[in-house]
Structures are given as C-alpha cells and as structure tokens.
Length: 231
Ligand SMILES: *Cc1c(COP(=O)(O)O)cnc(C)c1O
Image 1 (cartoon, rainbow, N blue to C red):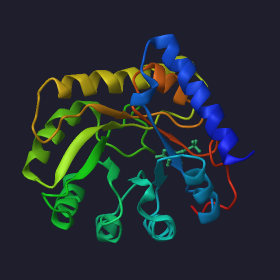
Image 2: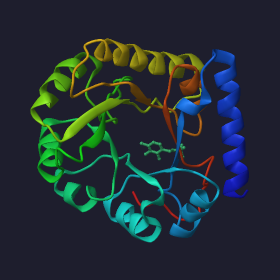
Image 3: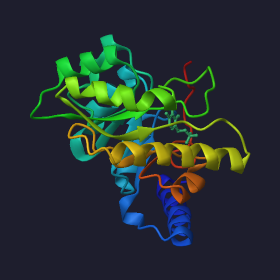
Image 4: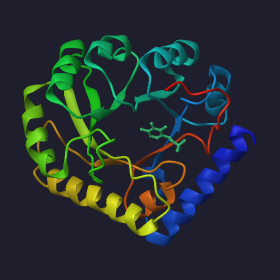
C-alpha cells in the first residue's frame, strides 16, 4: 500500500471516530512513526501530506531529520537517555517521554526559555513493569516539580496502552489518562497547560480518539515496515 492510501484510510477511521463522539477532527494530529522505515518511505509520508513525524532512536531520529528537515514537525516518542538529549534537541519540537527529573534537568539545560521544548509526561497507566513512565499517582507531584525547569512546557500526557485486543482494557487505559489530564489542566499551572493527550497507535487509535486523543502515533498502519527493527 502507498503511504498516501494508508493516510487516507487512517484519516477516514479517525473521522468516523470523531463523528461518533462529536469531536472535531481538526484538533487531532496524526504522527507518522517512522522507526520501522527508511528515509525514503518517511519522505513519502511527508509528500502524502503528513505533517508530524515520530522517531524513537536518537541516531536515526537525527538521520531522518537531516534528510527531511524542517518541513515536518518532529516528535521524539521513545525512551530518551539523558546523554542523548543534546543530539536531538535542536531538531525535535516535542518530546513524548518525559518521565524523570534527571531528564527534565538535561532538557532544560540544552533548550532555552525563548524556544521551550514541548513535553508530554509519559504515564504508565497500565502499571506493566515493562513500560516506562510515572505512575498515575505520582503524575501531579512530578508535574509540579517541573515548574523548576523554565525551558520545558508540559503540553500534555502520553501513554502506551497494553498490548491487547481487549477493547475494554484499552478504553479504560485511555479514559484514565484523559481524567488525569483534566485534573492537571484544571490546576492552571503556567508551566503545564496540559491540554493534549498523546495516545493511540495502529491497533488502538480509534478507541484513543473516542476517548480524547489529540496526538495519535501511527507506525505500521501508516508507513508500514520496510526494514528490520533493531532491538
Ligand atoms: C512504535 C511506536 C508507535 C507506533 O506503533 P505502531 O503499532 O506501529 O503504530 C507509537 N508510539 C510509540 C511510543 C512507539 O514506540
């Protein structure tokens, strides 16, 4: 399938989910996750009209950025080692995996207050030990502490749902994240407007959109796979 065709299919699914729930599709951003594909294929996504690209390995993240450049908005979506922050910070507009103060400190050091880095706090809603992220209980106090890092703007919360076909579990996960986001947004923190929800991947984005996602991160169903994924 061409990326263009996949993009049309994803948009149609997203629009149907919006229609069912009375949401405005224009408020939902589709991030093409290009970690499984070549630079060429990622370029196809941009040519098909995709505005947001997501990567999860710093080296490849920069290779793709250097080849494709600033026509897209760049999202770093994976676990990020503090020592790699300086590699990506000039290129990436959003970081979806802020989950510890040591990382916040490093991001703050490398960014500037005039060009804040937009961050999602990653929350481990499902509590699986294999997943990173702060616990739902820790999220508010973690975000309060982020006020000490003026180059960081907490735009929202991110989660990865469990790998399951159980729609009830998926829906509960996304709903919990939305409720947590609403609690934090209601505090009106200057450093943490927390209005956005980064949730939903190829298998579950439809449910995530129904539950309030504003950024969906889609790899397989949008750009597919054209290379081996290194562990
Ligand atoms: C790989 C990845 C995705 C996309 O996964 P697909 O199931 O291929 O859509 C989304 N979010 C994160 C954090 C990822 O690592």
